[in-house]
Length: 217
Image (cartoon, rainbow, N blue to C red; front, side):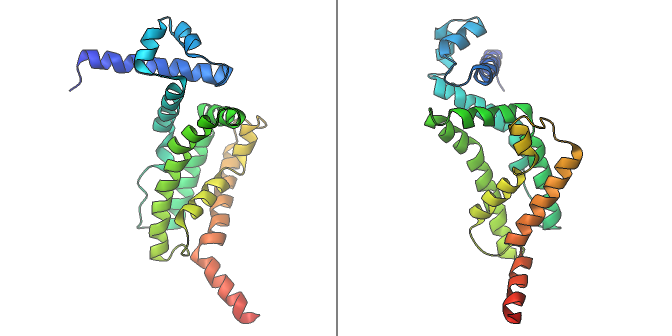
C-alpha cells in the first residue's frame, strides 16, 4: 500500500508531465526548455531535475503517459476464437478512434515536424508507441497465420500494413487540419476499407484467388 508521501510524489510527477505536454505541444521540442517548464510549474529547476534528468527523459514520460491513456486499442488481448474478421474490424475502429484524439494528433505533428532536427524524438516515439503496437499485433497475426486465416509470411510486416491502412483515410485529413474531427461515416468507411484491403492482401482468400487465376491462365 502506497504511503501518503509516495502518492504526493506521483501526483507531482503527473503534474510535471501534464505541464510539459502542454509546453511541448505549444512551443515544440526545440522551443521548450527545462527552465521554461520549471517556470510554468512555479517551482525551481532543482525540483524538476529531481524528477527528470533531461528534457529527453521528460519527453519520453509525456509519450508514455499518452500511450498509457490511449494505447489500449492496440494492446488489449485479442481473442483467437470467434470471427477474426469481426475482431479486425473492432480493432481497426478502436485504433482509428484513438488516432483522432487531439493529444495523439498533436504528438504525431510534433514528432513529424521535429524528428529531422532531433532524431531522438523519432526513436523515443517509435520505441514507446508504434513498436509496441507492432509487437502486439505481430503476435496475434502470427497466431492467425498458424490457424490458416492469414497467409503465412512476416507477421510484423502484416501488422505494419494493417496500421498504415488504418491511418490512410480520415487520419490524414485530421493530421493536416482539413477535417479535425472525422465524421462517424468517415470512420466507418475507413474501418471497412482498411480491413477489406488488408484481407485481400493477407487473407487466406487471397491465396485461393491467386491459385484459381494461375490454373485458369
